[in-house]
Image (cartoon, rainbow, N blue to C red; front, side):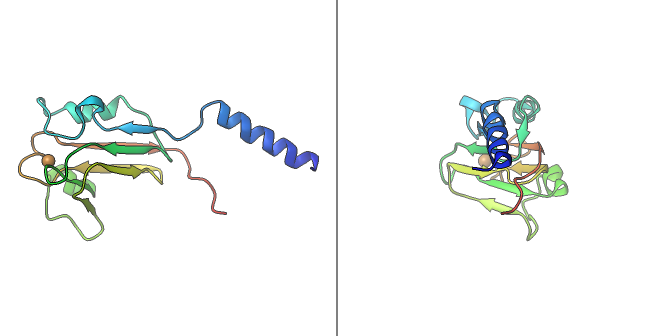
Amino acid sequence: MAKTSMVVMIVAMMMLISGIAAKNLTVGDEMGWKVPSSDDFYTTWAANQTFVVGDILVFNFDTGAHTVAITSRDAYDDCDKDIDADAIEVEEGPYERTLDSAGQFYFFCTIGFHCANGLKFSANVTGTPAPAP
Ligand SMILES: [Cu+2]
């Protein structure tokens, strides 16, 4: 093996060992994904996380009880259920979402008044995705 590729391999291994690895984040921790008792529960939860590209969000809920909509900021701010065509809406739980790019992501439930009652948060995802092969 050439010396340079050996060095590259060692650096890559050190990065792995030092913990630059994707992690699973269960949204709301033990609470899961449901209408919270205080309407800032999920925004507080999100404020205490570090979201990095490659992390996986796990939304624990029963199919039919809730949804996960990934939307624009405007739709999120208004809890707007008429989400635009670019938005993603998932109805089956549990749901896992890989954060595959950096930026701000907006999540809320589209059922009833769940969003207005706090079933929403946004995630500021940092880091750069792995280069394309
Ligand atoms: Cu809901």
